Length: 198
Image (cartoon, rainbow, N blue to C red; front, side, top):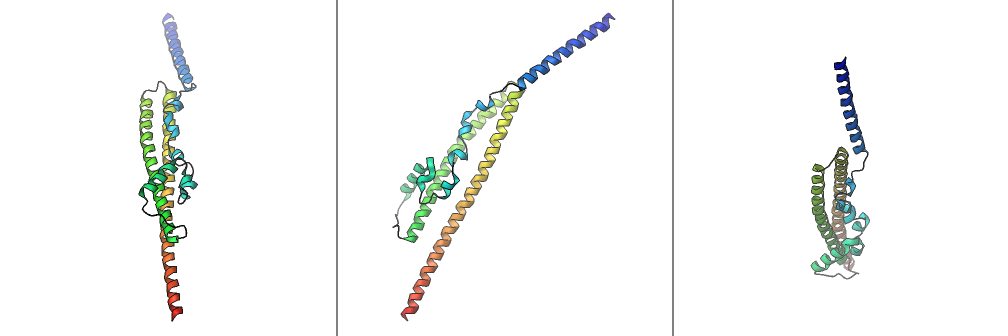
């Protein structure tokens, strides 16, 4: 009976230890890990901060100043590469101006995205390093959730960039179409003048 009592006491001590460990685990899961405060730079990176308003991107030709923080860079690129300034009444010249504005806009955005991507890569490496240093289960779960959130933001940025690329290609196609139509209209007008002369 003494042996059975000792075995029961040992089992009871083992259960106490397990309950204590379970309580510690539960407490760690209910305590904020502070993972959101890790690498706060990630909150300031991404396409939302590079290009907060897609409408400004689409309206940029002729309105580079509407690009927000990118306006100064875009205007500087445009002026540095400018070889010609069209008269406002010259339709073909205005097409050249718009093409130059689009190129300056895309260069400014491309360089801003490259800078942002480098900073984001460094911040993600810091987040990855923090995962190895997480002190408890809650910290690991929070960091994994933060990592998954960053992956979702990256995917969203890629989709938005693809949309901007499609818009850019469509703008270029429309510009070529307008130039072709303008040339055809000028040719038809010359032909009509020739016919009226004879």
